[in-house]
Image 1 (cartoon, chains in turn green, yellow):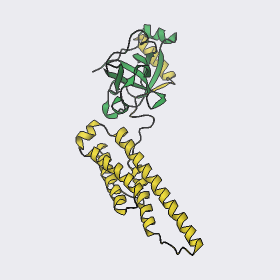
Image 2 (cartoon, chains in turn green, red):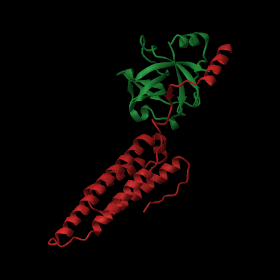
Image 3 (cartoon, chains in turn orange, purple):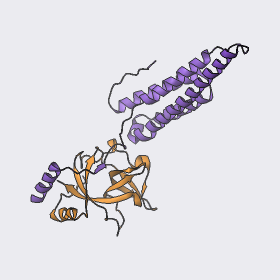
Image 4 (cartoon, chains in turn orange, blue):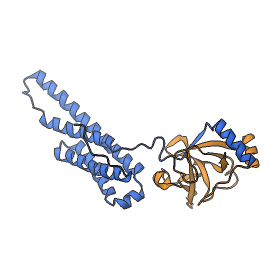
Length: 116
Length: 159
């Protein structure tokens, strides 16, 4: 079962100096790891130096709704560097199974830890 | 532990205002085959009404104009509602239904294909049989849809 680190002093400090974005989860597609109301910290600069890896928990822009951010896990990466992102709870997730793999620039950050 | 307690306090005192969606589809995730059924019912109704229209004597100008106006309106509504039914069906098909549903209901793709084709046929023709068949296929989709939610929702029509 996938784990998410708990917040530590380092992450808390990075959030205070605005190097982490704090986001509240809505919806059930990341159960059992994240339930609605849980909060996470996201590193928007995580992929500036190296590309996302399979297994990363990421925040992406919804390909059909640019105003919405979604939280999903990268399951596979194609040779063309598109990312197949899926919810941990496939029965209640709309993800790459529906909207296809997403290009790298849709991925806007890596979830670093749980907040609270 | 102190950090955890501190962040829990921050979270309960002031929850994050920015959200990230782990929804089953954004933005609402609300699906119901009823929307396709209502549109298909309108198609069936318009088909019946077009077929029931009495052609007036062309020398009666008033009746003649009225007939053509009514005929055009019925056709326009049939066209629009058949297109809406198709759109609603395609949204259900591509956004709601997922591979496990297809495993449980192997005829799913055929049903939607048939339903979409019937929507087109109902636009092209004035065919009572096809309009009724569209309703029947949507009923089958209704049954499968609610079975995937383990809910027993009785099929009903507005008319």
